[in-house]
Length: 139
Image (cartoon, rainbow, N blue to C red):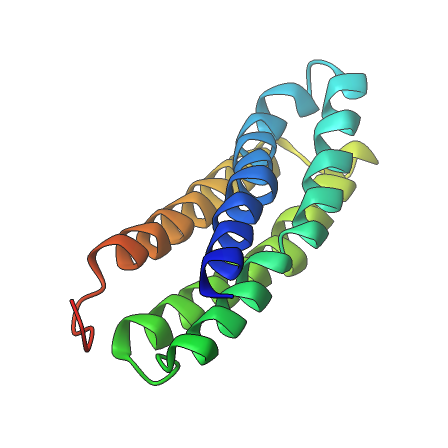
């Protein structure tokens, strides 16, 4: 069961979080230049962002099966994941929608680019935690 959960967890991260990282980063570049491409990037960000919920859900199931839900690296990863998810749902997706409606000025696109960078940094930190597992009970 652990191998299945780990496989689904890693694949979901690659297949769902990866595209969101790319599309949210590319959106500001195309928002002012090509509305069709920007619209596609927004739809992918929104849809794959929803599917990316599988990553923490399966990760929590995996941590529970392994008895690791209270290990510091798991808790920190969950907090960083929640922050990244909140940033995506409450800031990035709505601001992309505003930009597509013409409500986003150049400063708004700059903010979106920064937020996408923070989102990607948070996920990068989570990946590092998954690999290094500082304070893990069995290395």
